[in-house]
Image (cartoon, rainbow, N blue to C red; front, side, top):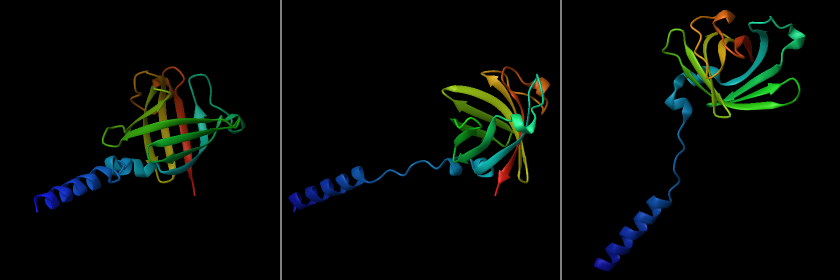
Length: 147
């Protein structure tokens, strides 16, 4: 009887040890991410040096799935990054990390429009939606959700 109990315990331990581990769900961990999901077309870009014409916009679209964001560029390239929104802050905050570098910003979503004001790498976060608040390669961008 002891042998059977030991074998059962070992079998149970093996099944538990080999059971698939459920991956963390970023949408469950940060419900604010749900607002970002999908594809977004760039409508406008303004930085400290200029307001870009529509035919000069460098980004075709953003595709956001979970925390992962893929930026599709006009030249055919892509940039992979992760996003971490904080909808409880005022204004709402967004950290974007690409190649281990953090771009801090603020955002607002109004219906199908996403407005972001971001800074350059490792620069202080803007406090309002104004290009004068940005540093480095930051700017003020507006995106429209692609349905």
